[in-house]
Amino acid sequence: MPGTVPISDGEWPSDTELLRRHVAGDSDAFGELFRRHRDRLWAVALRTVCDPEEAADALQDAMISAFRRAADFRGDSAVTTWLHRIVVNASLDRLRRRAVRPVTSAGDEQALEALLAHDPDPARAADTRLDIDAALRILPPAQRAALVVVDMLGFSVDDAAAILDTSPGTVKSRCARARARLLPHVAHLRGNRSASQRVSPAQGGEA
Amino acid sequence: MSEPKEKMTHPDSEVLAEFRAGLITGRSGARISGHLAACERCAGLSDQLAEISTLLAAVPAPAMPDAVARRLEGVLAAEAANRDSSERAVDPRSPDRATRPRPRRHWDFRLVALRVLAPAAAVVVLAAGGYGLSRIGGSSSTSSQAASSGVASAASQAQRGGAPVPSSAAKSGHEAVPGEAPLTFEVVTSGTSYQRATLRLQLEHELALHARGAAGQQELASASVKGCVLRVTRGVILVLVENAHYQGQPAIVIVAHSGRDDAAWVIAPGCSASSDHVLAETTLPGTSAP
Image (tube, rainbow over the protein chains, first blue to last red):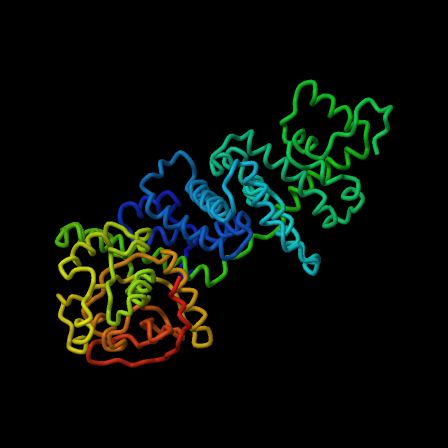
């Protein structure tokens, strides 16, 4: 059955070794690599595209691509970084394709934001996770991806820059803007309402 | 909010966040730093920004749903199977094959999905009022995304039979189909596990995937599968043939146009031109049409 491949602690081949075996023709190696990281890869896809169906499609695109392009992996980053990068790219591709009109990147982000901004279901307010998921939807995709990779998955800014194919400075900037934007929407989760009322969300917009 | 006599207006949350990220340095940074030391409100805001990261880090990662895991396992298994077969196609007697790590065959129980006919092609045939097995295979444009060198070589082998299969081939379909039969179609591997209660829904989803070219890797069908398909469908226009699971057991799923609707059969494995065991049948309201 999928996902039930026996795993013996301490005897894991490294990710790099699995990838090497895959390139050498081992039919199982890539599947094992996938099972090893699938939940985190799923998390990044799901939170970047904000839709389970789209996330599954994005992840499928990404895994096929990684499977076929494994020989291109040069080892200048960790295998997980490489995998996450492919998943993030596939996720952002999905979002781009879903956008009504692919214009400038700023316009693109606004269109996507409008697409993603629906569904603020108040009944979910009790559940922190759903709340956070909902709040993430208000972010432009590039900011959201940065925040997911850095704050939620815990990658370093440098690794995140490799994953997001941009500079560390841009990663920091996207994360900062994303946090500022989220602030009014998640302040209540920490029981501090006064801040959310005093900070005008409109101020957190485009800069 | 901010009193006019203050030295500095309160920085907005974005400026504070950028400052916290180390993006504002020099004189501007020093000014913000000084302001934070003096302004309780902004210091609180800055703390809250820090707490956002803590809050986000504490949210547990959602586990991949089983259905998604199964689907992706299937896709990867298809990739692996296709890679194996395309290597084989390059040199079927390669001595390398004996020395290559023998894959554990834990995919053997898995269904091999056969996409018999690209839905777009099916529609063309229908519009022409055609009846009978129509062409299938590598010439379909919708399969190009999933096409690989293995599929390409399979398609070139198939060219001997010509892409469009004359309907007479279908009429003679009850005879045993020899290996060189003009009927050729591709086998797509998928990881779908059908359940009785959700059979139609799952089929509709699967057909939508196929219509988008999002299916897995493809291989030519074996002679026995060809025989089985001809036996079961009796020569109607095939939409999809898929070796999948049904109720947890391996099964072959066949979808074909039948009048205005699509008909679907779930067949026990081992089906051939001379025998079949139908596990379930259903109809789909023309879901294969784009």
